[in-house]
Image (cartoon, rainbow over all chains, first blue to last red; front, side, top):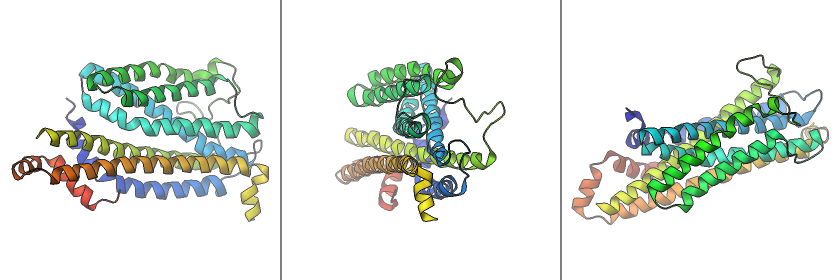
Length: 235
Length: 77
């Protein structure tokens, strides 16, 4: 059923793709940075500090997206007993965690000129911190537990439990009165952000997505070669 | 003009530090993952080199092993 997820088949792509993805990432990031730092207009209220949005928002989106994929695949590995799902999850987690940290730190830097404080125990910020803790527990579990069956179970449970936090993060600004603003970019309803700011945001999101794909491919190759190394020992 | 870009009406410190932190994280993560990959590739080549003729034949029958060897020899990423 999941022949497409066979490691050997993925490796055929993942072994060759990184150099092309890296090349594309550098081009898209260069365009994105030029747009974000120099060409996009300043905000009438927040002035130039609005430019932090171009690194903060894509990082938050991608860290949430990656955790959602990890949770779905973990559920899949539980139901279908597909070990490659957990290998994919393990390879996705480092970039998800780093994007989560970037979202928290750049959010804190943005908070100082906008709200006058580096940190507030606000629902959106706190739930993002909880996500970082789940990422941390997930990554640590892969390091701590040695038994493969046990580590797959534990990491899957962490990912599935952590998934409960995803809708909390998304709707925290609607459910509670928060310091954090409501979402300006909506897929289903009208977007309140001006096109001149939406363009650099879209380009930076594409660049960050390419970076997470690059890291995923390299990490997946590393994990697969590790398995093959153990295989050579058994020959 | 350059001063305007650097200072950004007093927000320069915040904007530049946010972008610098992001790029620093990207660079560090890329380096760490690249080092891990290179280490495993080197280990694979070393183990492969220490196999006897029969085992090499058996290992080479697997496409993934051939692919790893080929990539280790030609790839810079």
